[in-house]
Image (tube, rainbow, N blue to C red):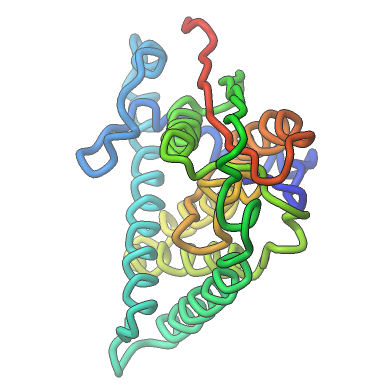
Length: 273
């Protein structure tokens, strides 16, 4: 969700993000029942045809890393849901690492509630659209360098939110509203869960944690399109797709809209190879 306070990828970040981008790109071939939105794409299949066992092994390793990140993020959301209900996540005899995770979880939930309090009741342009205005259509287009599964997931979620009437031009500057500690601790808790879940495979755990570190917690519904600054609205996304969709495509198309103007999404794909 690059909003006004978004990270613009530097040369170093582009280099660091290559692993996570490559892993996410290879997710075009990764398909599970729990994640139907990561369905197999024809382009992904084309990339694997004719590959030898070494390439297949590399791709299987990438899929394992992506699965580790996804599983840890699903677990993170379950823990945050429990904390928000007042349920203690870790047991009485939890290890030091679990204590650190629990501290981060409590902070994420508390800060998200504070942000909900800032947003709720803010009126048109803060917590709801201006129903007197016609929706403005924003076009999102896949670009080379974006992992296709990641673009499909992000653009599809925004399109659905637009159809449900949840997208609108946010009133004010998003950096004045955003609490960056939420995304910072969200990412930290995710890395800690990855390491805990794979403590018996320390090398793999570090590789998966590094891949997650090079991704970004993305506001699924962008702050600039009225999304809440809350853990419920976060999912990890590669830097390239995050920057391209939020900063390069959405922002210039809505910057001159009236506050609260409803927004719809049109998704475009380049011709497949």
